[in-house]
Length: 211
Image (cartoon, rainbow, N blue to C red; front, side, top):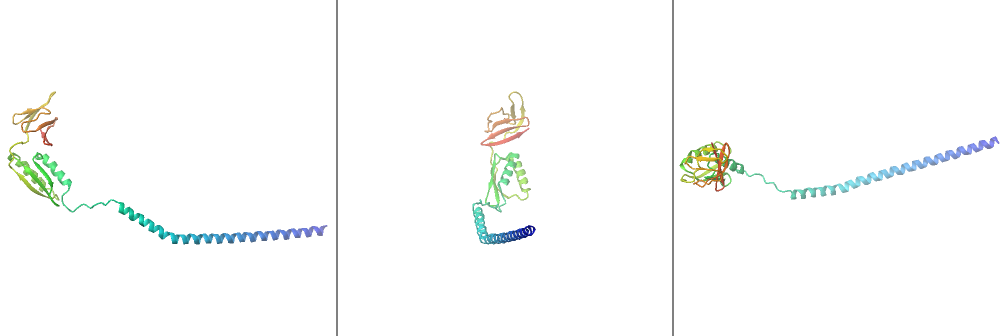
């Protein structure tokens, strides 16, 4: 019986060794196929990138070009010396000198502003002050003067005093007076009375009369 048992043991050992070799062979085979599959995938990816990348770049380039076409064109500012800001600034200064009801200022060509209108002899000092102020502003465009000195009517009323009560009253140098809404003889209408000034308006132009 003992020899029979030894024989069986040898057979079992041989079977075990044979099975182990088969398992090893299968593992090696699987490993080989996995390596082959990985290599094939890598080659496919490299080939795809090589072939598709130029197409992607071309598509992206086309998209960028189309976006550039659709992008609104922003024009560079012209080299002209004047801008709306200069005109607006000059108009505000005309108001400070009580000349905005007399004079208008507009763009004239590419590098010049034009000021025109008529002023009275009493307003000449204010006009000279405006010109001095304008000429002192470095970088402002040249100012073309088309100003006459023949205006004799419609001067700005000269404010003397204001009586404040339930219905404030403004008194002027020519002896006239008025309340809010009063139209004076020279066509100016009182449109505002405040503690520090009153406001008169005519033909769309408003003037501030300070105390």
